[in-house]
Length: 150
Length: 100
Image (tube, rainbow over all chains, first blue to last red; front, side, top):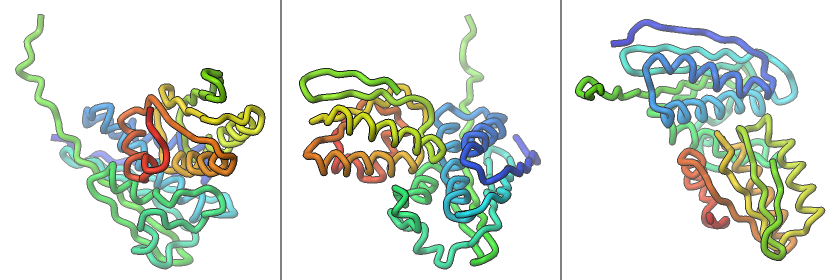
């Protein structure tokens, strides 16, 4: 049973930090011994949340993104928080293909991807004050105790 | 990114690395240069060396699809990993782009 581990990371809303955030999330989740597929799922979802903060929340400025992680039993939770423009209508924003940056070849599929690869996605937003995206994934452990060693 | 020619008017481009918002701009520019320079009838994107793609890649692919379609050309894809294939499926890209 894994309990009580937490981390908090702050970084600038630079696109180069999207890969950095992905690696950190994978590194943190690794203590639950996930499969490569599960790690890929987590990295992709984190990539979406961080990119949303960079492209939409902090549209024309460089500011701080906070990524928090928590492990409890076999569940890993992440929060990606920004203090940007916020979302006026969250229900509308999470709809597939909705984007506020269509002219930049944005697909509007970020939240859909998060929902596909994570078990739980929650969006809390306050227009003018910022947004926090909560992502949760359960890592089922494979019991290798009956494997024979040769 | 590597570039190769095959059957007449069919060009293949092998993408590599992680396809995200950070890398999309550079990849887009390079693909557009290849499209402008070679005017392919079919452009095939090989994803065998792409280790991750998020929804920024969806926008990139759709943008290239539209550009090629405007020229009467086709865009196809091949060698997608499980994760990238899933991103293509949930975005509906396979309704307009053929997977080889």
